[in-house]
Length: 439
Ligand code: NAD
Ligand code: UGA
Image 1: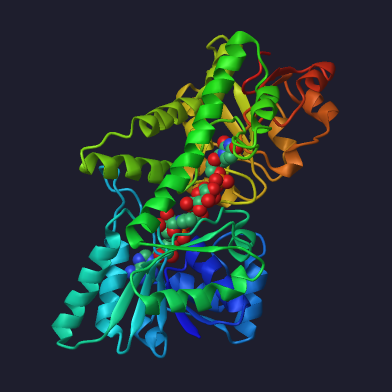
Image 2: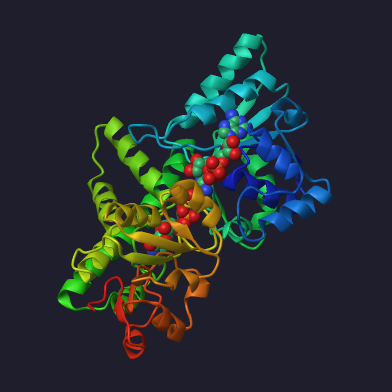
């Protein structure tokens, strides 16, 4: 089978690489010529464990190629995936201009039956717009070609994207024709052999499933952060509370880690977009509005702790930061809590020294020369007044505390990800502050 993936970002590249890995002939398309030229030279635009190897291997096998020419890619292809961005519009709703541009491109260039599958995260009703846009282009050409649309939202997590795609908890597919169902079944067959189920449903329910899933996960995070803040006030320990509640199988242990708020390219925008969709139907999603509000405040919690520690005298203080990406195993800094922490520290007059194993280049796009960058985590500590942990990269988990203690001017650690043991920190002579434990 031959397929086309339009949009060669996180989702498009992982989707293309994984489909080609199981033997499907994949052409990835993007409008960004520079990106395509680089991909053709084997330069991968994102950091994602395992992706570079998989792309190179399948390019060599001749099963994976990259182009800017959608017309060429469409030749002999029966299925096209749309995996372009759906960034927030000014009012918070998902901007569909990239998705609809691809639908129009399909109508302009297809010459045979095509199943157009939307993999981008799109609000309910988008498939109808995709269908209309595509049909308008066919009408302009005055030709009648059969096509189907389908919805196949993507649930991969950055940093674990390959594994998530190859071994998904489930694959959700919204369809409205038997032909589309059969095509999607055969495409996903290699991924379902080990019992990973494909759940077929109508398209609107599939579109809704994606937003509901991300919103539920964001809700778990804001809930545990809210409880963590209360734990600090009443003297409880969020780590114990998390274990206590997570052992109830109805609640579960996953996604209950208190921290400095959720970031990334999806939770913030998808929660916002679902609230907007609801309001368009005159419905208020009160729980999600609270989830958003809690998250906004949570991103400031570490800054507030640092400010309290120095009794408001932040001006001129040097703050060392470990971790800038929105989570480990990625260089992605979109909506990362570090953006808020750095902004507030700089506004308060602090000097910021930062280290991240992967995201330094990305950080330079955001902060320019307003902060200092280091290639070694200990170098950030020289002349620093405290250390703040913003991302739980594995290499931060067991540092040499003697060196940390020796280098810091003040023995203060602000741990936004609860990666250290409070008692051990005290024994090592630190003033230690984390999330959800009264210190
Ligand atoms: P991205 O920004 O990394 O990539 C999008 C790509 O689409 C870019 O390379 C851009 O140049 C290209 N593009 C835009 N318009 C185009 C057009 N008309 N023709 C061809 N290419 C075009 O985006 P992403 O992170 O891969 O996200 C894509 C979608 O998937 C979004 O809706 C997102 O919400 C959703 N999603 C993302 C993730 C994730 O982890 N990043 C996970 C699940 C779902
Ligand atoms: C998330 C979802 O997990 C994916 O299923 C989904 O496909 C994707 O969004 C998307 O739609 O793009 P991702 O944003 O890559 O994936 O990362 P997550 O691992 O979900 O983390 C998101 C944020 O929540 C991070 O800032 C992380 O630090 C935070 N988080 C996560 C917590 O604060 N506590 C937790 O227990 C888990």
